[in-house]
Image (cartoon, rainbow, N blue to C red):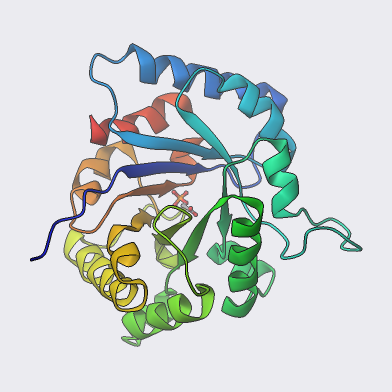
Amino acid sequence: MTATVKIKALVAGNWKMNGLKASAKEVKALSRLISKSAKKAKCDVLICPPATLIPALKEAAKGSKIAIGGQDCHAKVSGAHTGDISAEMLKDAGASYVIVGHSERRADHAETSEMVRAKVEAAHRAGLVAIVCVGETDAQRDAGETLSLIRAQLAGSLPKGITAKNTVIAYEPVWAIGTGRTPTADDVAKVHAAIRSALKKRFKVEGEAMRLLYGGSVKASNAVELMGVPNVDGALVGGASLKAADFNGIIAAYR
Ligand code: PGA
């Protein structure tokens, strides 16, 4: 018997290197927009600001369903790693999630899947949910390498024994990030089906229940279509998460 697993979607915002203390007003506005809406959003909501803003945004989100997360963490608990932040520090500041292996970190900081796996382990050690990003570049897509690349990134980036509760996967084609270009619904369906099947094979029921986000130029105008694709259980949103009204327009796909 194959029972269909019911998965609660997650709409996550990645503010990247944007935002100052005054940006807490966007979280307050989002909290009002979410609670004012006649139809309640049936998804979890997360904002990952720069680490400097985690305490202020956690405070601004008080009383709402908005969770706060980090954008990266070091693999170690503490030590001589100038400029780095540990998963334990993010947790202490008010985070409950952390994004790891974003393509901008893989590209700008030469992060390998092996390093990403150590960060996932660090996130779990600290009690954070890890959002693990995978995705192909334009050249890899043109070369027909998308699925093999993504399977390799998953195999290398995911440690043993992860669960649907402590890990989320985000498929983000590098060429779709910040470009306004998105894959077709069919293309997203193919990749997400391949991710689901790889996760089921390795993590069994946990892989079946794990949330798979799509990310890359998600906005209110394409959210309903992209979020309706089979095996898409939410979104990882960059640019359109910075303003409460825009982000709420994406969350609305789950009302
Ligand atoms: P974008 O970024 O929504 O601005 O394309 C997505 C991401 O990098 O997570």
